[in-house]
Length: 326
Image 1 (cartoon, one colour):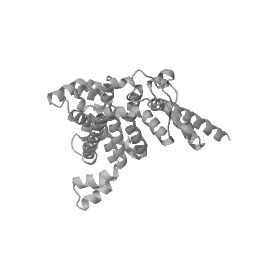
Image 2 (cartoon, rainbow, N blue to C red):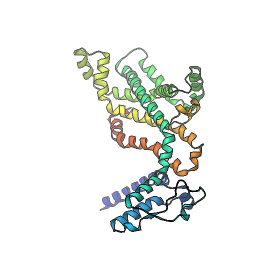
Image 3 (cartoon, rainbow, N blue to C red):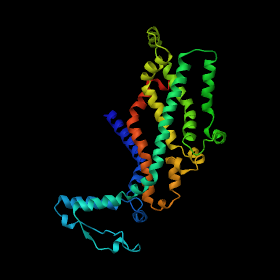
Image 4 (tube, rainbow, N blue to C red):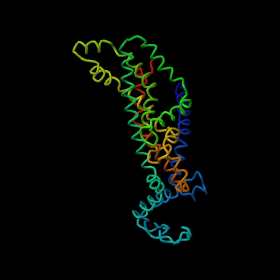
């Protein structure tokens, strides 16, 4: 009995923590469906269009469809006229639901037109960077783990010591370097530094995992005539899928959320990513509609939410199978 009571309070506390964690996201999601007028009157209110959809659905279920009516503002009407001054218009249930849905998702349509190029840029940079980090990092870690050469351990310690240097200290030298190389206002100014910056963590994680692989696998493959590339491609990589997931998730999260580097290296909006694109969007007339900005914040976080849902299991598996073994 005491055990059940402890479990109850433990789950209750965890549910409160989960709720408090989700409140900011739910707040943004809720306000993305509301107009400025609704927010001015009640900042934490429920979307009016959604209320009408629920009300009209109840009319549909109870056979009171004749009570469905909406105040629809004509696009050709004078701009100073208010919706409250209009006479209600009788509508069918599908027409009313379609109209309410269009009004409710208006902010998403507006922000998507502005945000779509930045989202595509971010996907391109994240995928290219993740592939580069995984490929180069795994090859480097394979060399450190499976081959012994003079200075092997000392060189690896030097690589690890770079993790102690704060990224902000390398910001100015990195900018001067890419400027001298002529990489500003391009995709390469994002992909190459991100790929180079992700190598330290990648090498550390891959090497920790490779050290735990049994030597008998490699000896058997060598007896069968396998070379260096065959060992790496046919043995090491297939066994490293959980660790690859760890490196990919960490790298994608860091790349997606990075704001400062893309903003200072790309003056051309053509090469901006989501983080810097949202900042630019906030300085345009689009930002006058708060629901549009909230919709943009929601859309920009959805890919990370999907990544979290589908990558949590392989990420945890990679962590618990020796990715961070001492």
